[in-house]
Image 1 (cartoon, one colour):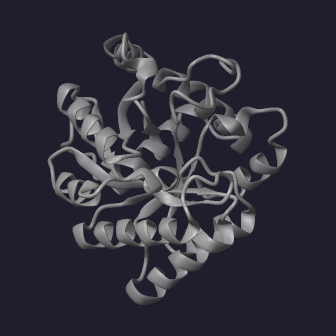
Image 2 (cartoon, rainbow, N blue to C red):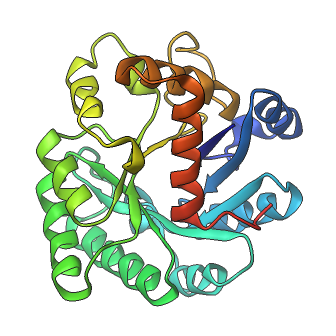
Length: 260
């Protein structure tokens, strides 16, 4: 049994067949899926979906590329949602220099808000980092120096080994998505080999980043099996052991026992 720690099941591409998507995931051995908010509205939807499906829980937050579009009251809405039942994490939050949708200082402000909210509620934080490794590490290091280990995950990790090791040192988990299966991702595979299995998570980032052999198609939680199988082979461990350990990691980080 596997746990998909990051999916966007509120995406319109799932609007017509979400029940089938959840069913296929369960048939494929996916025992739980965390559906992730990126805006106040999508966070509300994620929580609603988690209420409808016992195999789902939600993360609530405003993703850095959506921060500039946040309306008055949206952050207060995230704060209210964060204490609801079946909310397992705060985020998706973080920093992004690849896109230019939100001024960077505004991204930093919201990242700090999410980190503080997660700390106050003793919930893990789901961190997005794209072309902003030094900036992200600087903010995380500041939190770590003040408060100690950070509960959270670097989602869909594509960064350097140095960044991964720094994040591990601060208490974070490292999560891999379908990109690790791509032909041009050898550098990422070399990083994955260095991550202790007890600190590794797996995800789909559905509907994005379908793994080989599903690349080019809409991603969905059932496809997590392909990424997990690939990583198990890469690490030269038994698939069942890999699934058991990464699921244990997810349950501990997101406190999933009793969420179903």
